[in-house]
Length: 401
Image 1 (tube, rainbow, N blue to C red):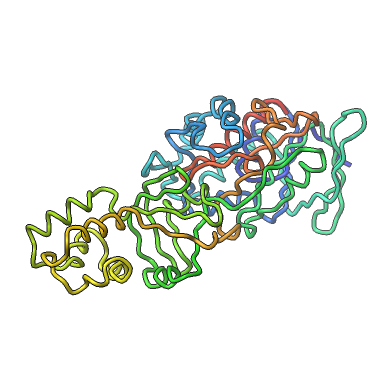
Image 2: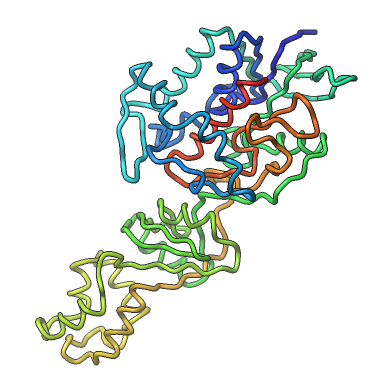
């Protein structure tokens, strides 16, 4: 049997940040990771460059049943705090669109930084460790855990237990429902879970169109249920993806339609009517090919203006040009499903934040039990916000465990 002050379940972004913060305070910290490697999601994020935070982080960048819950942690440990940590390790990084910060070289730089920080303060990390039993000790004296490691059973006691097990997204990187089971065991309620930041699919004729356009990307305005984003949309052989689609997927539910503006920086009505006067002998597809890919124009022609395909602009009535312009600005699509947890970057929903202190991340009805990171009902937009939530929530718990 081993006695430690703090056990952290999960060696991902939130877990490692919590561990190093607690150990800096002199706490004896053990991190138990179920998989064979630590930080798998860190390494694959951002195309291997890790979009580790954003210059402009506010609570409005998060989806949570309590829109105020994230504020305390984000103020306690801001994106600038993490940027300073990155700079102190001389990690080169760059800013991309919308204030997103990426490693210039490799996501390995962020994981190495976290592991170096953990090593300096004596954090012990144990991989291939699966918790087979968890009990609260009598009299509120912490927790007892039975852990299976490569066929061997170990018993640990700790004062504080931190659940940083992640969620259901990308199971190949260790996503699981373990954190939710622990929450249920101690009587915490859960908010319904579903895949977020995920590509959308089609089962109708739109699927064939997407297959034909697979690999084509363009900037669009995309909207659903009152939310809108201006980002790139990518056609895939299953449907649509890209930053715009991942963002709007957080607000889409099965049965909902989404609206795509293919020409967000142009007034298509004015443009087409002016072109009719100035270039009356031109074909519509020729004009649209100046602003949209020819393959997309050809596909849209079959949907929106098949009867005018072989007519010059002078022969197309103004009313028809207005209709076509409207369709280009408001292409209504009805996805059949998302790609699900297999490719989702986050899991929406999770441990209900009403059950957890926004300052310490401690469960209100179970002393010494903490929940941090993605297991909570806090999900960020695309752009480094989910990593920032991991740093902020992990730090907040690390200050008190």
